Image 1: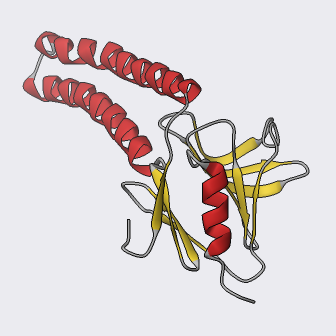
Image 2: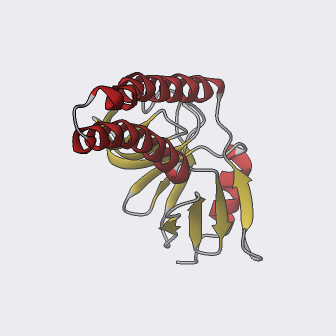
Length: 181
């Protein structure tokens, strides 16, 4: 958090925790199921070159699964910092900066507003919901969420949906930090 900003935590809801555990277990289990037989086969190879290639393939599968899990965790929102003229989506890798301009709309999104959205590029349940989405009636939007309810919309020409733990206080703080027209 910056010295002038206020930090709002973004905790995962029980649905996201369950999805994360399930997806992680499937990724680890599937990669182990594919990689372990490959590493065991190295002794059956007729020459050292073939054995090394098979062993490398097994390790490559494990490393790829670990990289996938790490990158999904590193890009997931952990919270939001509100400063004068700026909201930052705090995440370990590549924080997102949302500029606040005069006329920026900040409001609570109605329940079910984003149900049935299409993910055009993003993550829909491994450590968070984030990326580019689209829904008829809403249009294209960016989502940085850890819950499937209590969304806050920030529309500065682009639509952003966020899920701070305290949406009412967050909305109030963002409105307070909007630049004057």
